[in-house]
View: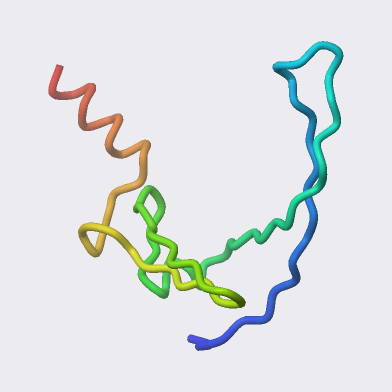
Length: 82
């Protein structure tokens, strides 16, 4: 597994649908993480992630158990118990 990745910050803009007429909101920095490498690093689907924010640095850590089942599996278990 690669231990470092290089990503590019993007921008995302939107509109405030609560206002009439819709007001364009200023763009904001966006960072999207995706890929099998996240699972390999211990970030399973449905797991909560904590983010420590420091100037020029983000640290991501899993919260809770080392493995969390996917949301669909949780839903299936709940419906069987009913």
